[in-house]
Image (cartoon, rainbow, N blue to C red; front, top):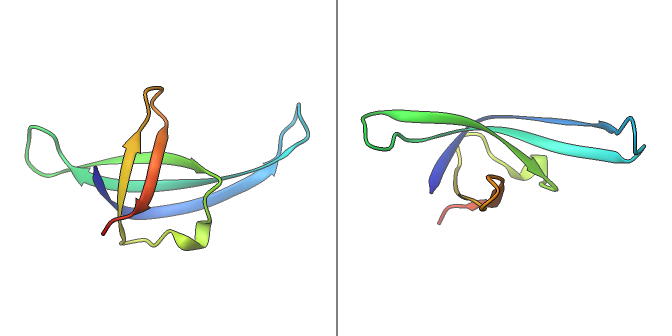
Length: 77
């Protein structure tokens, strides 16, 4: 599905139990509302993504996997 990025933020830290470093990009996206008029929005979590490469206002192709996690997040053509 094609989505538009309307906001983003990055957070990182160290896991309390594991002691391993983590980094996550939270992205706010909007998309056409299914079976209705207007747009819907969602907050998605992207791991292992380059924060600087995601453009606010840009369009991206996004797909979820069977477990409900974002599997594909690439710039739309």
